[in-house]
Length: 277
Image 1: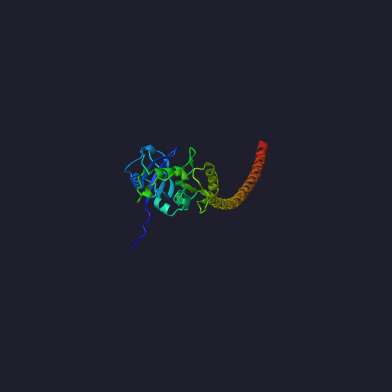
Image 2: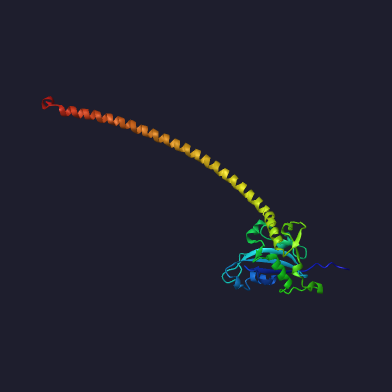
């Protein structure tokens, strides 16, 4: 009975620096980093851009998750870091063709789960070279030692002949351009920015609408509070004015009483001793 053999995928992680790929490792080594069994002093106290890759035995990238990761002063990964890279890759949308068909892609602006958006980044260019091209070249060099199951699988691919779908075709289009075409890459990047930003703009528009609604509610609440405060002030003012009127009346009566006492005193003082006898 013949059985269909499912292609095996090798999982790896590549770390980027300002100039390009700084370090490559198979996923079990990355797990050792996560467990604190080993460290990477070269990344001490840095937030590093990295990519989780699923690679076929024919040295084709089949899935990619572009994520960031924090290292402490000793070069150990932050213990709070937790991203399900394998699950994210398996549920990812359709990305560019990096030589073996469209890959499954997760990156900033191309992720269905907003929870991980702050920990993602978008591949671009470093010193005039494409991040995707550097990944493909690194996979082709096969310094990770990925083994194929026949001679064809071990054949080194010529990267200058590789084709990659334009970034605007990551959503399912059919445009194909050369990966090393700088002018086409610039055009692809501008179109990708426009399309990949649609979801973010829609989310921002929804957030703005929600903020406007909250502001309207706050304005109405403050207006109602102002009316209540004004009424309270008017009531308090009426009470004070009433009390002030009572004080004025009492003062007037006291002044009249004082005037009468003064008259009486004046009469008493004006009497002669004879009048008194």
